[in-house]
Length: 317
Ligand code: CUA
Image (tube, rainbow, N blue to C red; front, side):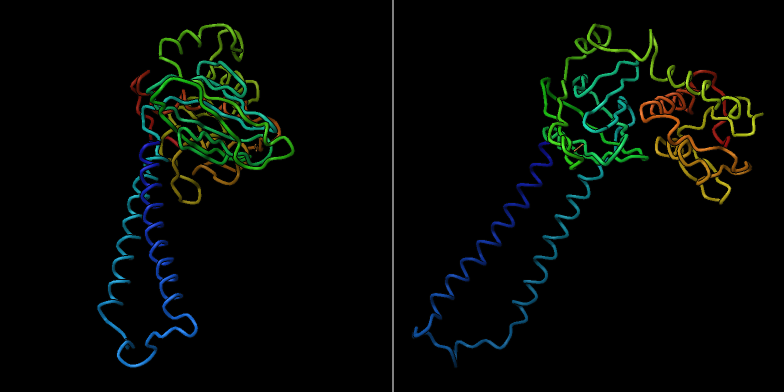
């Protein structure tokens, strides 16, 4: 996307320069022409009492220019902020003052993110303390990372190499040290890196979703959210990615943000047919555990289900 963002940026800059140039030239020209004691004609024939043509042109031309910029920017913006369906998920936690990354296969790293080249990468991000901002200038992405919320950004690196990662939101005394790098690798190198030394897995041979499943059982979630739907809470099998009907009559999409909201603030959105009895897990699970739980709920979500058993429980609350 970098080339497209730059093209838009240069187009707007060029347009601004052209208009600024026109204004400056007019200022200088009139300042000289009508300076004090100049012999310019200030009355009579040179006086214009309005021109419909002139007025219409300075309304209509800028109108179309501005609308053109708006449409162009909006078209680019929606593509910049809509991750492709086949993207590869990385879980990001910001905290004072470091970036923590968790790969779906369980590898964890700090301030360095290894990714394969030519593959859309989706970042599922949250913060452990204050607002941070995930900023990789080379990829032209910047996204706030907010405590108690999940935000998403994506990129597809088209070249291998190391790229700077910054925190772009003032987050405390060591904000300027909250930096790192994104290392873009050939897919084969990335596979080797995933299996190699220098990385820390969540547990021995444990993927992110498996780590989440352990937590799901340990925290007692599985007691109420039984897979067969006989618990006091709704079954969560096949829920991720589906439309959930709420007690309020509203229908929401069960995405990452919904899952996190439901864990931290369970009574805000009650699933239709259930009682508001779930306690909050705010302060009980930390952000990295939260993302692990989300990874697990995703693994038992709609897509996983249809590939596993071909079952059709998509409408289940
Ligand atoms: Cu984190 Cu600035």
